[in-house]
Length: 346
Image (cartoon, rainbow, N blue to C red; front, side, top):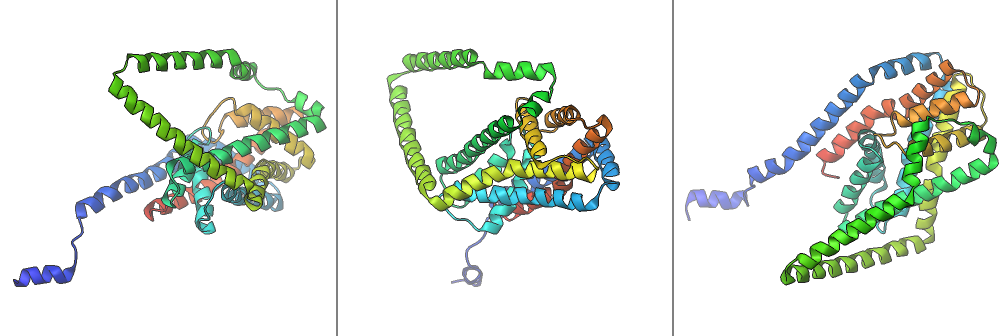
């Protein structure tokens, strides 16, 4: 054996540097994209950020601390909810970090899709299959919608006059009416089914057999994942975590709004803040935007003026709410996302 061969054997197996670099480049680009996104968001919304900072500089700092603690508690509530919606137990610290990172993604992509994608990637990394990961996040989202609706119904029943007093632009009401119109969705579903049936009928027999096999296999996987999710719901501890976390999230947002209003000298009750947040957040959902920025702001401004808050103070409260829930946590959540990408946790 030559000296060179002996040296290679002692050195052990060689590492394919090209493969390592190829796998790390996408993560590096993602980390750079996160940093660029933070800068772009700060520049494009700088006037709102500076106005909010100026307004909060004269606010009661004790109430602002309460609002900041409420923002941090939302991450904890998200962690509890996610624990209750899955069949495995990942490290709680990592899961909390994922919720912090997901808050940044939700401010970049609309309708919470960014946070869903990050949670799915995390669950896949910890051994869940694609169907189980999507099912877990989907269950989390579904329970969140149910709890938000239940809280809204209770709030409107308790304070119907307040809910009726909140006025929103007419275009939003038209959008909500169109979204609730079932005929359009039924017609779209029928057209999609007819198109699918036509494509299947025109396909070759071999292709139809392959497609039938894939459909059957997909159906089996879906059935397995549904049984697994049902097992999660039957666990009393997981079910308690799922529902407790889901109920806590909108209530914590209302607490943040309540604290911001009191920091500016607006004496509202907790019940008023809860009803106001539930109503305006539901209305803003009909206009999907990254993190609800824009839609929620307009609805919240209209709601605050409807309950008697002056326009100037209402604007300061909305900007302050956004500053505490979005802009202040933006940089740390982006940093956490970059670290998770760097360490291949997601």
